[in-house]
Structure formats: structure tokens, C-alpha cells
Image 1 (tube, rainbow over the protein chains, first blue to last red):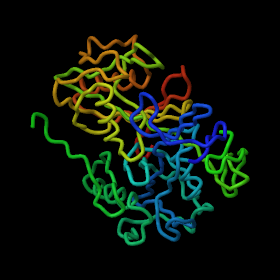
Image 2 (image 1 turned 60 degrees about the horizontal axis):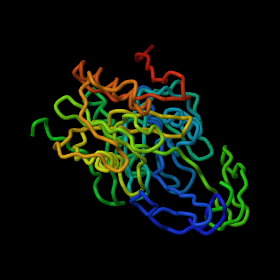
Image 3 (image 1 turned 120 degrees about the vertical axis):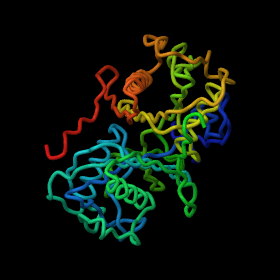
Image 4 (image 1 turned 135 degrees about the horizontal axis):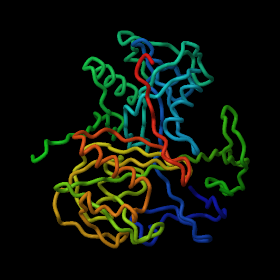
Length: 191
Length: 191
């Protein structure tokens, strides 16, 4: 950020009074421009034990497989965002079952919220951002051709939970591009 | 937004190629300025069945009671944000137990992520944004002097779950300032 989006004056980076972090501040109109992490919403939608996946027609990760997901928009809630992204990328209508995966990616300031969902019918088709859309069995997941680590982590948790017969919220943090995900470890009460 | 934060030129509102929503676009340098919902992270921290609460020393809702919470910052994950806000507002150290409450507020483009937590010691004190900090019994919750509906919803779900003996992720959406919260209703499989 170089210029104030309110008045057009050059901004400077400084810690505002009462704050603890440097912000882009406008010396002309006094506006403080906060930057915050962005939310990515998506869906892991199932049909008869197969999972709805899209092959990306856009960069980054052109040609690789993903779950339908994208930036949450203003004016919608996170569930509506997951429905919208699934409709846009996979042409598919789903019913949300609940929040399933919460993955922080601190090095790009994003948080993924992936919902478990049921596909409502088989009338789906690749949207503009997808090369193809498919229902994929666990045995056929293209593990070496997945677009994002968030997709890999979410799918692994999902199949593990499905075998165990119960779904539990999956939470993880990715702090660097290569380090293993960090997960919350809660010691037993009284420990 | 009136001016491009990259080059300082006046922006115009238009739907970029391949997009579906109007964005602030710079006709000079081509920058597209997306605006997205913001994340608020906080904690519901317990000590011997009492809940850590803060009375606000800032607007909005000066003088009313809240759970420690605030905007998630770039460079941290949502759990670290909840720890930081609890330290800043209540001077308290906590241990996160897990994500508990996810509340969308679509009319202000915010999503609340409140974590259940354990207070680690009794050495807490009001930070600059709090008038006072207290450990509050369920019977003493100031229901008519709560700062935000998100706090009310989260506390009600929490005490209900505690009586039931198990905590389940609480999800709700607030679409207007006054309408009842909207909650996901999932029909049984096969319905």
C-alpha cells in the first residue's frame, strides 16, 4: 500500500496511538488502513462415498486437483460462500452438513473453512475455473496431483474419520511452505 | 475506497473480466482491490466453572461485558490471535481447548471464531481496552449488559453444552441487527 484509498495522499507505516502494530496511516486525512487475513471457504461434498473434486483451469496450480473453494465475499456467510464456490467451480448443488476443516496458513494470511456436504444430484459440470469435475473414490484420489496442502490434509482427515465412523472438526496450522502442519494438542484436564 | 492504494489514481467500481461482482479497479495501473470479510478471534476461558469476562473500556459498547476477542492479525493463526487478545484485554494466560463457536455476521462482514480455553492462573488484570476483568459464575452472567449478540449466543450454547456434558461446535449466522440467528438444520441422511 502506497497511497491512501480514502484521499489519495501517500501513506506512511506507523504504530497508531493505542495500537501495538505498524499500520498504513494517512497523515493527510488520518485514515488507518488495516490489513487482515482472508477467509477461503469450500466444500467436501460426497455422493455414495465418492468425493466431488475439480481440476484447476487457472493458476496457481493449473491442472491439479482441488476441492471447490475460494475467497469468501462480503455480504455472504461462510456456508453460503461454500455453496457458491461449489456452484461456480463444479456446477454442483450441495447441502451443507457442518464445518469440518479449519486450516490456518499463516505465511499467506489465509484461513480455510471447509464444510462437509452432500451432493444433491449428479447434474454437475466444470465451471470456468475448472478443466473437469469428477466424483472420486478414496482409492482413486490423485494424492500426487493435489493443488494445495489444505486439500491433502482435509481429505486425509476425512477418510480417517469415515473409517472411524465419526467426524470431528479438523484443525491445523501451516506456518511455512514445507514444514509439517502444527496441530493443537490438549493435555487431559488436571494435567 | 476512492483512490488506488497502489498508484494513487481514482478507482472505479466495475466487474473485472472473469469475475461476477463489482470491485474497485484502477484504470491507471490495473490493480483490482478486493474487499473481504474480517475474522474476529476470541476465547471463552474457564476457571473452576467460572468464565473470564471483560467490561469494555472502548466504544462500541463501552461499559458492557464481553469475552476477550478482536480482529485476527496477519502473521498469526486463529489460535494465536485468541491467546493474544486474551492477554491484551484481560492480562490472562490461557490454554486453548478447541474451536467452539463460529458466528457469521453478514451485515458487518465479520466472522467470529471463539475458542474454548482453560485459564492457566489467577494473575489477570484489565488491559487498556477493559474497565475490569472478572471470573463470572453462570448465575451471575450479566445477560442484560452483554456487549455483543455473539457473546450472548456463545455463552448460552456453552452453558447448555456444559449441562449436557459435551461440547459441540456452535454455528450461527446473524443477517440483520435484530432478526433471530439463523442456524444450520441438517436433515437425517436419506431424508
